[in-house]
Image (tube, rainbow over all chains, first blue to last red):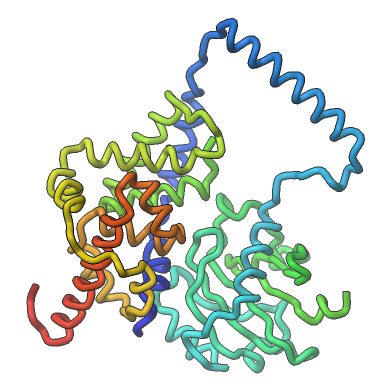
Length: 210
Length: 160
């Protein structure tokens, strides 16, 4: 199937991933070899003193500011939600239109996993519209589109192989855990693991209620 | 210093240059070690800095003479009334891309990577690669022509 060059290239390049073994090796190299230490000269000491003053001022401002204004590192959950919502809002054209799961499985031949319905998605097969290749945190994923039976609006469901070293700990509903929730750009996103797959789904109806 | 996603990004960049995953991994490992020995002045420039190390290392391995012919490109007289967006209307399937990808010169793969994956503009590509803007545009012009020729050859069964 022909696709725009840019899209094809992105898909192609995202198929290149370091293996777990290679990542472990690289991370071991990084952990082992700390950056070289530099000797302090008088100039450097002056610079350090200046930076310390700036830091002290920044700290003072930080203390005086309300806590929720401080920037904290973005969690993996939030990063997933941001990526899913960004792509959901863009609503790029579907590559395959079908409400049949077998039809989707037949189309997505380049995935390293088998598409599965989820217990978390009500009437999955009945509400399916189709899908397209995509990626989540650089891992090839299937982006499916469904009609939300309550709101009749469109929701986006991502499915990809669950790689713990990339996605971190996510709740596994097969072990009785509940999906995690994050909000991004006014859209609610649920993230969970099921049958060894990572699922992330928007919930537009929740956004409307909020 | 590097998180997993950054390592994956750099690995893909190295894959674009080498068109070979094992060589890309070797380049990346070498670049990470160099970067640890001599870190960038600004931590925010870590990715760009490491990409430059990967690129320089790739060139230093002796493969650059045919593959990065800057001198020849710099004198190119191709009109520059073209734009990188001219690549956007090309439709291609996975097999065609795979065939063409292996035939492209590393610099063309690099330009395409920076354009498609990193979403760089011509000016940004020019800055990153330290190549004049006109040269990048000439390269894109030829690249587009070559892609079209190759697609035509594939459809008619000719060999290029």
